[in-house]
Image (cartoon, rainbow, N blue to C red):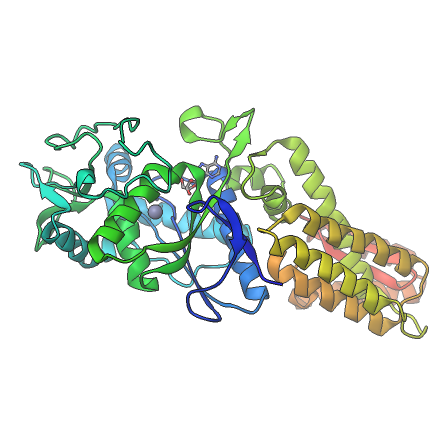
Length: 465
Ligand code: AMP
Ligand code: ZN
């Protein structure tokens, strides 16, 4: 089977064929680091992470690049308000963003280029656009892309060919444009704002050129998959295409992958609407990061996903079921022979999981395959028809699929020696029928975040979230 993906440009789901056999190059529009990212931003990134993880699971080598926008109007404004430098502000929120990525189990991209460290690449691309007649200068030292010079503009967003329906927002620092639709490639210097001395003059880059320059610098042109939220289709991605294709004459991207909105209270989660939640806030409320990841991943990436306490509760109990199974399998001991029907059960689960994800990352049936398997394995544990080796096979199987989902508890080998010592002491106390000591040790472990449960396979532990 091949992986099939929806491509926004084609408007259909198609077989995915990498441009270079065996290697997939993916670019994701990353954060503008002027404040804490909200979980709507992370829904889009988790969808990209799922894509990257699944392609890797399918045997592809994936190079994943996600930029960090560390210079823009919002960053400059916020730094001024807080009385700190732009560099300091951007570093603070980049750090917070990376911590959230880790908490949500999002694989670290292979490269996370910062805009301010790629000014020469942007300048080179702008120079080509100037030389090719696709860009022009204005009196304040800014440089604009000329939409009139690029008839293919609007294909991704399916804009009216005449461009008449485009409503341009005229920003304060974008005066002097030939056409209201034209967008800034370069912003002329402004007193008191960061500026670079370059071959095209002093100033700073526009937002769109950052992604064009950094994606093709690391991934070449064309590259395979460009991801982002649906709100980036226009104008951001449309502008990226125009810049990159007009500068080189080559196709920019082979497949466009866009994630639907996370909604809260029936509306898009957005800073401007105030209906936002951050990873940190939810963690402080005691929500487990794995439950949050699952909640953000639980609907097809192209459909809107409404977020609320119900979805968190459902995800939390799903994670509890997974954790309970993993700890039951870890503790399981039996002398009975291998269960002859286990391989077929696991094969069927794998095949259902892959069939679903091959189909444009159809997550719901993939998760159903896992949770049906959990139920079936629990049944076999209760009936004690698995061998000890079978339990090991089931754990390895779950961990293998978890390379894609990243929701399973971390492997038990991470237990600190002092906690292991308490567990060992408790096991000996129980063996010696010293129930008082056993209870005392259970409480001591509980205070350290380790929940202990006694089963016929001996004590079983898991981390409290
Ligand atoms: P922004 O900070 O608005 O530039 O957004 C950063 C990324 O998050 C972009 O890919 C957006 O499309 C995406 N994004 C913003 N809000 C949401 C939302 N409510 N749901 C899903 N993705 C979002
Ligand atoms: Zn971008």
